[in-house]
Structures are given as C-alpha cells and as structure tokens.
Image 1 (cartoon, one colour):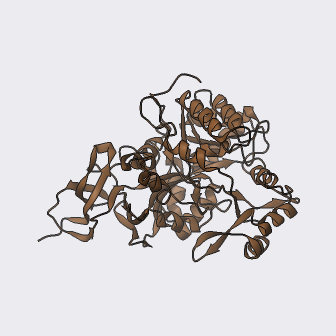
Image 2 (cartoon, one colour; image 1 turned 180 degrees about the horizontal axis):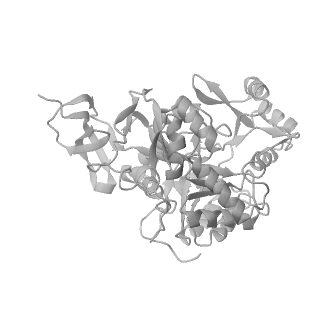
Length: 474
C-alpha cells in the first residue's frame, strides 16, 4: 500500500480542547501540517505507538531565555528535552539569540523580544519616544518581534516604561514587562504601576509569581491582589511559573552585581549586594550557579559553582530559592468568575535557566486534580498561541494546523516525543531535532534567513489581543 503520511501517532489519548477532543485516536502529519485525526487506516514513513500516552498540541513556552545575557545556547536542548515545540525568548539581546539559534538549534520555533536596557539599547533610564522608536526599529530589523522592559533588573522611569508600551502599541509590536521602575521594586505595587503605565495598551506581564513572594504581606494575599489587577485590565496577558527558583545574571561590574534583582536577592539572604557578597552566597549555597554539564545547565553551589563563576569572570547565570509554594500553585489554578483562568498562561522563565518544568510540575497539578488535562493544554498551548497571534495554526490539532505535537507519559510526568512542523524534535526522550525557525517581523526576515534560519512571519497588531472577559476594577 502506498504511504500516505509522513507520521502517524497511533492510539494515544488526544487532548485538544480547541476542537473539543479528549478521546483515543490517531494523529497523522504530512507536509509539516496536521493531516487527519481519527481512526486512520493509511500508512506513514514513521509510525509511533502512543497507547497509554497523551497526544496534545505542541507545548508553547511564552517565557524563556536563550541569549548570552541569560540562558545561552544549551537552552535549545533543554527546551527540546522538556517537550516544548515553540518558545518566546523574553529579553534577548536579539543578535545573541539568533546566533545561538543558528549554532545550536534543536528543531524548535522561537521568537524573541529585545531588551530595553540603559547603556546598551537605550542611552538612559528615561528614553524619549524618538529614541524608543529607533530602538524598536533596530530590534525588528534584526529579527525581534518587540521589546522587553526589564524593570526588576534594569529599571526605567515610570514615564519611560509607559512610553515603551505606547511605541509598541503604535507599531503593532509585542511588548512584555518585568514589573518595577526606578521608583518601585518588583512587587505587587510595581505590578500595579505597570498596569497603570500600559494605559490600556497591549502588554504581556511576565512571571506574576515573582511579585507575590510574601515580602510585604502574606504571599497568598499578594497573589489575590495580583489576580484582581489582571482581571481589571483586559489589555494585559499574564503568565506565571511553578519553579521554586528564580533566575538572575551573576555578572558584576564596578564591584556590584549589574542586576538590581540579584542585589535584592543577596540582601534577602543576608549577604552584601556586592561581588564579594555574591561569592559568599555561592559558597554558602544561597546562590546557585547555572553550571554547563553534558550540553545542559544544572544548578551548583559550593566549590564547583564558585569556581565556574570565577572562571566566567562572574558572567554566568545565578538562581536563588526565591518563590514560596502557595502563590505558585494558586496563580497556576485560579479562575475568573466566567471559568477562564485568572492568569492566562503557564510558562517557565526557563530555556537555559534550569527550570523547564511544564511537564514535571504542571502535570503534577493534573495528578492532584488541581488542573484537568484540558486545562493543562489550554494554559500551555491554546492560550499561548492566542497571545502570539498564532491561533489559526498553533495550539490545536485541527486539519491544516502546524504539525506541532507533544506526546506525554502522564504517569511519569514527562514528555517522550515531540514534533515541530511535522519534524521530530524529541524521540523516546532523546533530542533528534536540528535547525531552528524564527518568528520574525517582515523587516527582519531577510537578515534572519541570511543566518541560515527558517522564518515564520509575525503579523503586526495580531499579538496580545484584548480579553473580552474582564472583571470590574478591584
């Protein structure tokens, strides 16, 4: 019999809430697309027995780091091992992201927004509109789909924070914010300031759990305040993560960590916010170094971690046990009055930061009956596709959708296989994918193709759509 398909995934539990599917079925991929879902009698070049496994739309992680500043090249392999098929780098710098994608891609599709960093991409903490327009234009020409405000790390003035959001809204570009300005730290007050700065413009508000660490009041009270803020701002899309660790840069300049977040985490642990204080924190185990081992990053403190930090002249990733459990789980599961999720997406802030745990921790919530399997797919595929303006082609398994699929062993909380545009990325737990597709604006396509990367064109104005189901102001 003549081969009809490229791939058939046979007999898995197909969970596709966008198309109302939750039943055992076969899934066929052909020409990089979903060709058929059902009882398939044809043959394929590759057939995989998925009996006892879950077959879902490819996992989309909307907050990762794959750049020289954070994450690095190993992030591609780490995401592939975690079952991710599409990821959004939420900081850049874009030139490093595209270079690492060309050098170390594992078959994923990725997008990137470039950071707005004083002394690097802008001249000061208070850039004006013309400078920000030029910054966005340069970023887009290099392949970035928008800009990231790094408030918790490299804050701007409140006024400049709002101007970044306005410029991106004017141009239909993606914009995300790590809350905090030169006046306000990364807490619920900083989050409230970000909402006010958006002034109705589209905004992706990053890692909501990072603002609810119980430093000012009960962490659960802070989480409820955060939920109310998101509910009363339908222009804002939000995600949270489940890992106990955060992620920072360990790079120091002039005797102090460059990142404000690193300084504050040192003080929280009782260490001086200096280069010497960071060395002491690593030796004591409070700060953990992102140590390269066997092509991925692992956490290490003590002598080996300290040696790696010194060898890198401090320019290496650092993590702290910063996130209490209660708000992490509450933010992942809380719902609005209409039943939709209070926090739209479940992400990791991972990539090269070793916390790519959408399956290991997110599926744990399925085992606890805190989320259904449909809920998990909604938060890791359906909603992320929507915020990226890709709902027509990703986040579901309808005929003609991109052949992005993740196959999960729910019993072991782990991905066993994945496909991106119909090509294998992960097979029986081993990374087999190569190359990378970049989601880029039209003006960045030629440059990104010149690096040897495939492109997916981002449609201006389609990203971060406004929610219809907002609550009244709390």
